[in-house]
Amino acid sequence: MLRAAPVRSAGLLVAASASLHLTSVTASEAAGDQFDKFPFVISCEYKGMFHAFYLSRITPEGLATYVASERLAGTISLDGHAKAVGGSNGGNCLGKTLDQLQESGQAHFIKP
Image 1: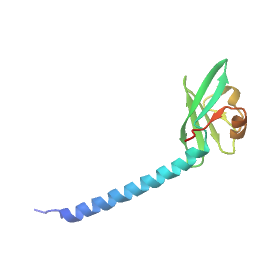
Image 2: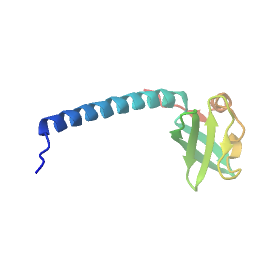
Image 3: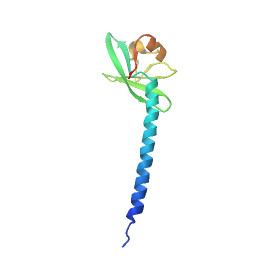
């Protein structure tokens, strides 16, 4: 009957765990940097209703996705224009840059 060496296995497990922990810290730090660049909420008017689009995710390429109620969503990059996802339901946000959304008071950042 074969017996596993518990000390070696435990050592490998600890090393693997430490490696995963460092990777997740680095990933979260990088994500934190990206989240600082985008507003947390973008407010848009569509058909007389005001919608709050909340930052949902940021791709490695820097494309941010925002979502609101009623299955509304849009994307924007740091140097691009706001686009609706799945249609043209973006209201008065469509086609604006982040700078334009900030100037119009529609981009809202979280401030400590």
